[in-house]
Length: 276
Image (cartoon, rainbow, N blue to C red; front, side, top):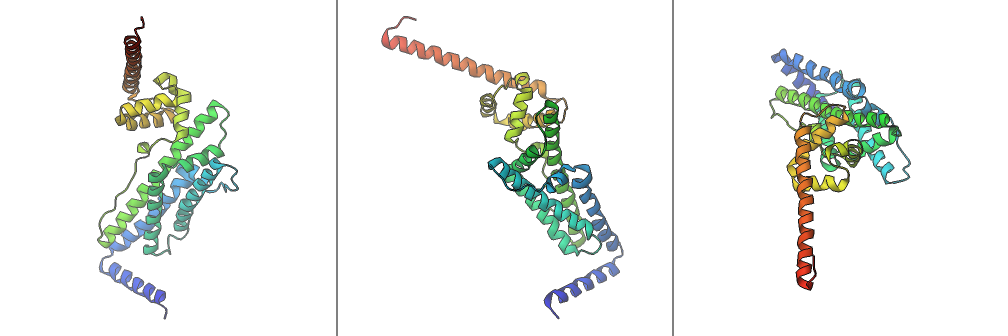
């Protein structure tokens, strides 16, 4: 008898004894397996932009941006592929295999979030969707937000299932959910904000964007939430306060710049006896 077969027999024996000792365990296991339906619905129904990305088949890049899009496609294909497998085999797949699959999903999503803030996925969506008209660009921005939120929901449900499995086996609860609005903005999102709302918020270019965040790094999260809200067509509740802070930063910068110029002119006049 080979080792894998022997291990499977022990697992079946242990599961049988556990369920026989406590009939409620059977309900717990059924709940874990049924939760895989909710997990599958995230990329396939609620946030199906993830399914579109997974099925895009991006290949044969001709430039750096298209190479990024392919990486985004491969990431999506892996996550959605694992979820499809769990859904299709939810009645027969071993609990240990469910655990490994969910840990892979959570680990990969967290790694990509930490490494590049889903910029490759954003580039894939940029390549897939038309963007010639203002309305098209708005729809594309909405799909960016949906993809991030969908990945957040996948992480949340996967962790919930894992924690139920841990409770089943007496292990420690796992953590690691991420808030999509807390993710750093991609370059595409920043430029889209500047094009559509820059004049309104006093941020007409990237130089001003950098100036504001360098002057007050604590603004990064409020501004990120504001940009995400605008991309979804909402009115950010803190927009007035953020506009005021940005205005003050830019005004102080201009004032300091003017003061420095005046001081420079005075110093030069004193040095060379110029009349000013």
